[in-house]
Length: 355
Image 1 (tube, helix red, strand yellow):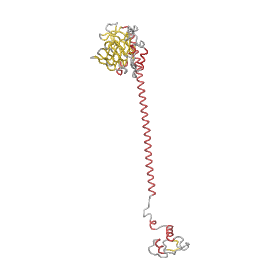
Image 2 (image 1 turned 90 degrees about the horizontal axis):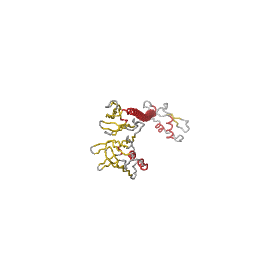
Image 3 (image 1 turned 45 degrees about the horizontal axis):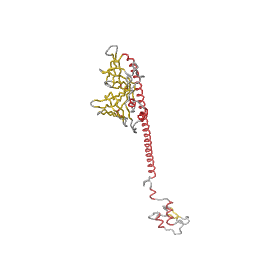
Image 4 (image 1 turned 45 degrees about the vertical axis):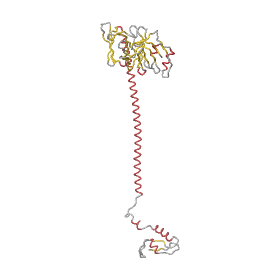
């Protein structure tokens, strides 16, 4: 969409605004041009003035934008409640959030359109957390010689003046009241934020009670923030412990498998030893000294088998003494009364011959 002209307090002037399909805001004033990128936007602050005639819409940036020699950490628009600037809607693009596309059909005010064009936190004035002694959202004060309006909000303290600042409650280190310049009529509010001390002076004493109530609410909110933060830390610690336990369990299982493998290897080695022992036993051959008879003689049954092969067990052939002596391995004839071996010579086996 295109909106304009829109009055801005910072940077000062009446700007024509163009909201692009990439959710970037382009501010143009004659030859001046300022681009507020969606990724650089931190939060939106929208508050009314005490008279109820204007709405302030502030864009707090992560990194200040530069215009000339000046840098702006907050871009602040001031829109009249009754006379809205003209808004011309363009064609919707796929990148444009649906919440922005609905603003056209819902016929929101220019301030609401400007405040709801991004998906960032929006800080609004709320009397639940602070209301002045006259039931207003802001209290008058001064910073040095410059007058301005102080808005105690749920998310922090917003000061419209010089300097234009927003102090988030999570970053506020200390809030304390001090006696003002005029004894008994005014007091100063000192806020320490991120190592810097801000002094908001000349606050009417009638606002001391509402300020004390706001400080108490702020302390309760900060305590709730700390509890949530601690809860997140504990949850993260628990999740990390569970992850570590799971890894340890995996390691133990892997160790068990490794031990089983080692045991199997040991068993295999033991089995190999047993097999080796058995093979040694079966392959054992006696020395010649232990088997003297086996080399010199054979059993009677073996000699008989050889004789059967030579002569045949039922052969009709005559007894051949030379062959007989050769089988018996006799080199020289022996006496008749000195038998070396007894063998079957006749057909029916009744007659025997000694050699």
